[in-house]
Image (cartoon, helix red, strand yellow):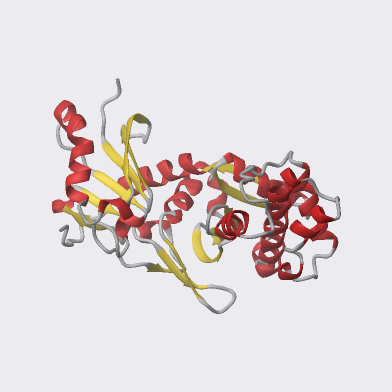
Length: 315
């Protein structure tokens, strides 16, 4: 077994994932625990209990953590780093706890292209990982998309995060699927690029892409009443409308950052496949990176770059 070097952790709102890594960032073991919302301030105890077995076998290990662990409900509130933000600045802005044995990665903030404040916490680590896994992203302009509950569209310029825009696409889908008449209640079918409803939703939105999304959503119910859409296809159709709207709006907003005819996607394969299909309708190639792999690569890079610790209270 390769010698362990550090612990990487993604401590989100609902889940904690810890990885025992060697010096190259390869995962040797893993552990899971409660998210920041469930911990209710008891971060040191939860963290120590999950690391107890590793410490018994390998002794003290440094840890680098990202996600909501650095938020107002986290272990220590780590300020957002304003964009533009280069990777080395992100690492330098980590906050250290426990005399530097634990570091928490900062989130990022910007004024987005709609002229509004915007924030991310956790996704910045995936961006750092993408820069490691795809060295071509370090030069020139690139548009990245991180699909999820709150999808992030990110403009990179010569390896720096220039700015970004958040679209609550996944959250809106879940709310409308589970709490509206647009989709038959109890129909929890997951969208996928092979579902007829999803492809139809994409095509219908793009057929009249100038029509506001608000004026298209009721189709999920009306097409079923007209016999034009099967009940099982209602949720995928809704997903197609939402993602098509998200993609079309982002491409207009970030037109100046789309130098190449491609977009890099970072996330779970199911979601990146949906967005790749939507991008393909615009004649764009999609290059997908696994979100978990990108996060690990980013945390490993932060561990290599860590500066002298910045002290913060840890209780």
